[in-house]
Image (cartoon, rainbow, N blue to C red):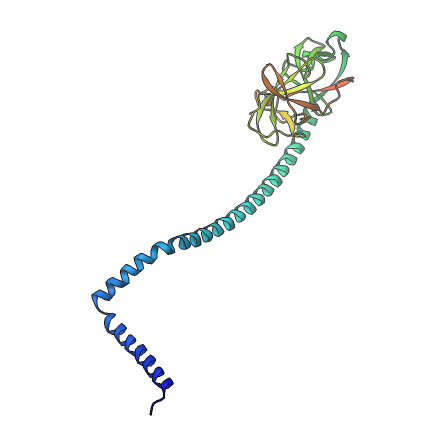
Length: 261
């Protein structure tokens, strides 16, 4: 005689077997396929947020990883760019120093008007020595002015601190062009630089290529401070001059050879 617990096990197994048979038999029927499609469509909506979130997290991870790689590549490119700029600037400086040594003519300051102390000086070289209007005047390789008028045995030099002197310049670090203007009181300001450019303290200012008389690359000074002033409605950057204009005894005239003019 079959016990009660054995009967329950038999009924359970029979039910499971019957269910499997019915499932296998109905799997190929159109009704079963239709029911499966509707079930899949119905389950799509509850699963959509989770699926989208998973895709979003995966996409964000890939984007973040790509961004980190791009940042690292940019840093490496900036480092290489700075190294190249430094090497090029050093080479240019050495070539420029050699060219200046060959073309300089020493001159002595023979007069400096007290009423125009920061505007002009007179030197003991003139047209007989090959001087011409516009030539650069240097103090230890630094531009301090330009020849303004020439006589046979002397010349007048307009200093870079003069209010009427305007020198085309370039910012070596950014290659932006501007104009250096004096204020008549011993100061020099740089005007007309692009306002959106990051001009910072310590950046080097030198002459720009504008004409055949004043060559480019002559050092003038460095940006004095990150703060700016306004001159005539223009944003201005004050310069720390590399020269010492308060004491001028001798200068050099940057003579260009005939083939260079």
